[in-house]
Length: 65
Image: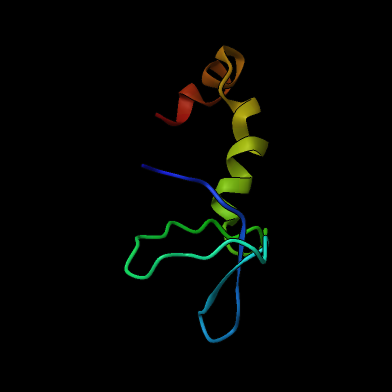
């Protein structure tokens, strides 16, 4: 069974669920996605550059291909 829970990861790398009543069982796999925008500038750029995926942009840059 896969569950999604919101956690914080402290400076030592320990994982703490935001719900204090939730206990994580030992030995489980964890996938964490940091909220800090500084960590994933490429992912942030993807949305900003989505505007470039238009036919007009292909025409404008065709001379460089």
